[in-house]
Image (cartoon, rainbow, N blue to C red):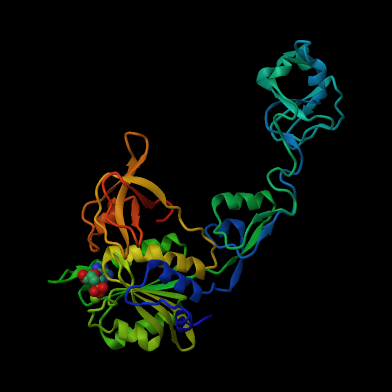
Amino acid sequence: MPSLQSVISCLSDYDPSALPVNQANAIIAEVLEPVRAMEQLAIRSALDRVLAHDVTSPIDVPAHDNSAMDGYAFPSQALTQAQAQGDLALDVIGTAYAGKAFAGEVQANQAVRIMTGAVMPAGCDTVIPQEFVEVQAGGNLIRFAPDQVRAGDNRRLRGEDLARGQSALRAGRILTPADLGLLASLGVPEVKVRRRLRVAFFSTGDELRSVGEPLDAGCVYDSNRYTLHGMLRRLNVELIDMGVVRDDPEAMEAAFRSACENADAIITSGGVSVGDADYTKQIMAKLGDVTFWKIAMRPGRPMAFGRIASNGHEAMLFGLPGNPVAVMVTFYHFVRAALHRLMGADVAPLPRIRARSTTPIRKKPGRTEYQRGIAAMGADGNLEVRLTGQQGSGVLRSMSEANCFIVLDHDQDTVVAGDLVEIMLFDGLI
Ligand code: AMP
Ligand code: MG
């Protein structure tokens, strides 16, 4: 694993006191390496886990040409022969069920009654759905207009879903319900996945009280541990909630050491601002290779990142700011991708889409802003977005009410009402 210092020393324009968002993310990505350990799991247990190997299909799916409809299978030569002769009449010589094929060979003037999923009988390449057919002679004869169907219709081809040897799923994929079904359709009972990431987190700040405690004068309830709990749960990591850690050098060091010895990554909130007089930063720096950034963003300027060690155990450290919205913004825009990388997951960046801002938004070039917005379809059918009220970094209600981030890039200037802005929908992110 490259050291943080070696990664940083390669950058010519590195300025830790005004670090652009992209540069911070690039440094984080370069320093991190995925956990190596894997485990073998039955596919049902592998939902939301990170696939550790490529899966190629051991079989053709479907394994045979089969019918996509309930109807009658027949050889399509009958259609060409029937041109301009009015209705086509075919003798029905048997039935093909799903799981019980018709054994005989079908001739040009013949058909076989067929159910959805049944193997196409030898000689047949086309299925006429039963609703287009007039059944006569007690089921022994069918009649239909030949223009109701074209050669090859309503037939699923062998291997059309996946051909044998074709890549079905790539290593790094976070397995979805569709993937579990796909694996089952290939007859694959188990897969190897990366072991779950262990993430320890705690809050720092002597003003913090935990839910359930009385709120003393000048104190606030610790909400960051709850948002972090929720955000981490969505990433399917193992959580180690270490509570609120007092601003006391011994308590702080013990917490960092214990976190380091039990987790792959540590997330703290609070205590990393410039003005902070507490011990958080000192202990972080004492235990490892940690840098303290001021990121050119709003909210969420201060952030510590690095690697700390205790008794031979290492863990990545993300020291997030204390303000509740800043915690969520820095989590989604730095930590989420970093944890994906640590867990070996290959996750495409979330798409940004454009929406028309119905309100002006004040913005200075030189920092990235993540304002909280509410996007909805406008009267003209196009996407519109407006700000949730107060955008202060302590106003957690803005996150709760929003359904998207309005992302105003580094160089973007003030937005005039009616301008297009980029948004990142929460759906899929949180
Ligand atoms: P700090 O980054 O430690 O200077 O904290 C910035 C602001 O966030 C202060 O107003 C803190 O009281 C508040 N804050 C810090 N940690 C938490 C927390 N865990 N829950 C709620 N607010 C917090
Ligand atoms: Mg503090």
